Image 1: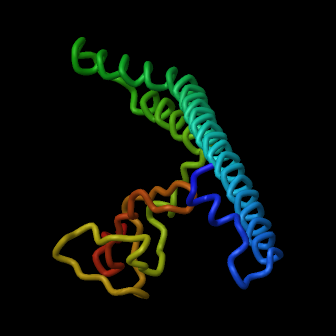
Image 2: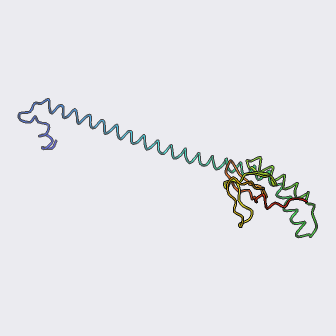
Image 3: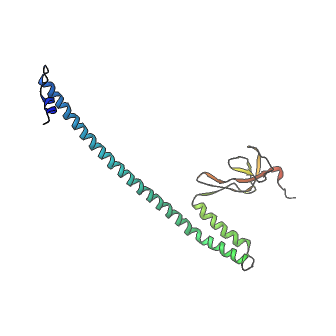
Length: 180
């Protein structure tokens, strides 16, 4: 034992030996608390590593789920997409005419598949609605339409899960070509 340490452990002149014992007891408690703190640090480190592992696994599972949903969607639209490409080839490469009803049937099939996955077609073309800048836009850049005005839907809007992806194109009622 070093002379310095030995001196610390000797009773101090005029001090009671029990004070030294209390000091030793506090040092033991401090050491115990330090060991406990180190143990908690190790547990916290292990918990953080577990959390990181679970986070990576969750991200991987989420990515896999998204991939599987997209693959299913693509499988369902593959038929209509192939038909549209074929119709384009017949029309533009072979120079043959197509029936509009054939193109429309394929387009409708494609839209139905997309609707099954949550795509929403908003408003009906020709319908009179109240203008809402969050859902509609003027068909003409020269025409200013105010919220609350009656307008005619010229092109439907599209949304997905409540988020508007495309505003419906509208025009003022006074600009409507009325049938004679």
